[in-house]
Structure formats: C-alpha cells, structure tokens
Length: 253
Image: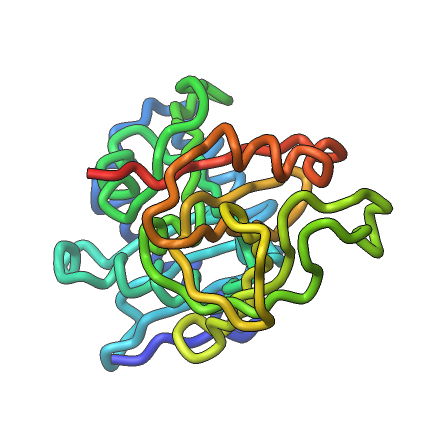
C-alpha cells in the first residue's frame, strides 16, 4: 500500500470516493438538508483542499486538509476497507507532512467522534449544528506523547540574560531539542529547575506550551526529579506574558 499527495486529476478520484462512501453509508445518517449541504460543500470547496490518498491497487482512502495541513476537513475510507487501519495510516501521514504544526483540528461529524478520539483528538468546544450538519470541534495537541520522556537539549540563552527578541530578562534558560531523527523537527525549549546550565543538558519534558495564534509550541524541560509547577510558571512568566499561553503538564503516575 502507498500513501501520497494527490495531483489535481487525482483529486477528482478522491471526491468520487467520498461521494461513493457517503451514499453507500446512508448519507452518514444525515437528514436531507444536511446531506444537501454536505454535497454542496464538496462541489464548492472540495477542489480547493489538499488531498492525500492511500492506494492498494485502487484508491481505498483519502484525507483532505487545508493548505497548512493542520486542519482535517474530510477523511473517508472505502466501506469494504474500513476497520483495517487505513484511516489511522492516513492520519499518521498527515501528521508527518505537517511536522511543525503544534495543533491539528477537525470538526468531527456526528458519529465519527469515536474514530478521532482513538487517533488522540479531544473535544475542545460544544457540539454545533451548521446547515443541519452536527459536528464536534476536536483538536490534537502535537508532542504530548513526549511528556515525561527524557530528552537532550542545547542551551542557547542561559538564565539571567536578556532574550534578544523579547527584550526581557530570562529567569530560565532557552534552547532547543533536536528531534530531526525521530520526527523531523527541532523543538524550542525552556530549561527550568536549575540555574546552572551547560551547553548540552539532559532532562525530562515536563510541560508543553501552546500559543493558539501561532503554529509552533515550546517544551518545558526540567532535571530528573524536579517537580514544582509554580516555580516553572514564575520562571517563564516574563517571556510568556506577551502570549495567550496554554500549558499541558506531565501528569506523574
């Protein structure tokens, strides 16, 4: 089996597959106005999306995303090939192609929430009805699988110096983790929990900071054994005061 980005001609095959699945599964349980709105969306907007397709001889599944690759608009698998891991494989490919994205989003149509939950998505809003279609806004926060995991980091800005871009004195060190071998990206980090740092440090991913208005995220890395969230918040405060920040923490078991 092969997954690849589809060209303009192949997009038509993907749209035809989506319509085929839609009709073969009883319009996904939608009433007539909702089904009509869905088909109108395919005709009006479907061609403008970016499609990935899985081939096993023929096209057996497709995922349509926005240009940035961080919002799933459509994901359909041929009915006879469902529950064979094709949707999961498509999602993993989408994640890899948008490795820099810190957050992926989808408006999960009613009945598909369980599928996206199994992929790691979580609800972040209320169920909504638009043009008769019921959907639940869901999000996937990238990197959370690294929480609590050891990581090697490079320190570029020691604690107690002025950050060159934010013009604020750092109470924590700043640097990066090189994950280019595993997921193809570098992760910006704050090093907290010890004032003395060397260029190369080893610690634990203690938290991940997301900025909703930006595509990137920043990891909080601490020495093994350190556990003081308030100390971390106090340390990163001068740098994070300029952002609408959201933090997910490592929950020790």
